[in-house]
Image (cartoon, rainbow, N blue to C red; front, side):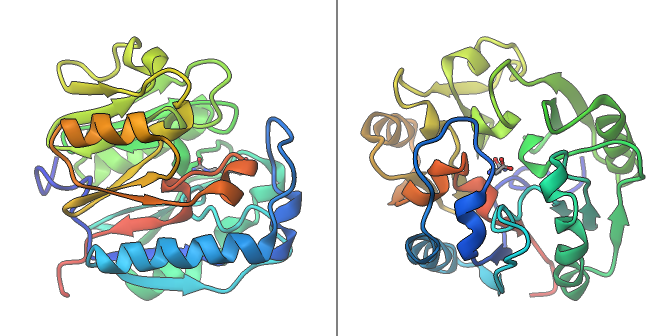
Length: 268
Ligand code: CIR
């Protein structure tokens, strides 16, 4: 793998998109009430500030009313120092998001590679582990898409493995996150999957499964607020944390990783 340790958490930039009012129509597995656009934008502002305080330059794109889930920018693309890869989200209502994220990618990257037509991959199913990249098959990511994506990664010098996301989990990263330094945070089910080899796994305590989706940005781990046991477990493993409200995102199955594309550019 190019670049070595730190690829999963040493970042200089992020791309985000403001939640639209139409986020009230966002996709979800269970109905816990509709998110409110204005409230979601307040939480989003805190998220953007946290990324900035962690050292990132953040591009904030305008809301896209025609795409209710478009604030979850992690899903239509994947970014590496060598270039951005435009993915093909697996949900029909999200397919058009890739076209709209492209200009923001082209503004930051010389190279924007497109996943070939036919298969689907959501960025939420892609876990960077520094020494390999895991691609989870899910209701959104299929074999054809995963294989084509693995080929692109391989051409760029990266190794990737295709895994089965456990049943009932929306995205691979809904149930696990990389903390960097060979440490992974995962739900009990995901930890038992064997995907993480001999890496240290911090287990998310029962009842706090939503908190399995966190993001390490440079020297801090952003965690969702209201999950004190998970936060304590991450801190006990030696990481500093900052808690952020994600109440509106959660209503439509979104977490902290979904709300940004994070990457390192060497010229800044
Ligand atoms: C969806 O179902 O596509 C959105 N409501 C939530 C997307 C969350 N994204 C992610 O986990 N990467």
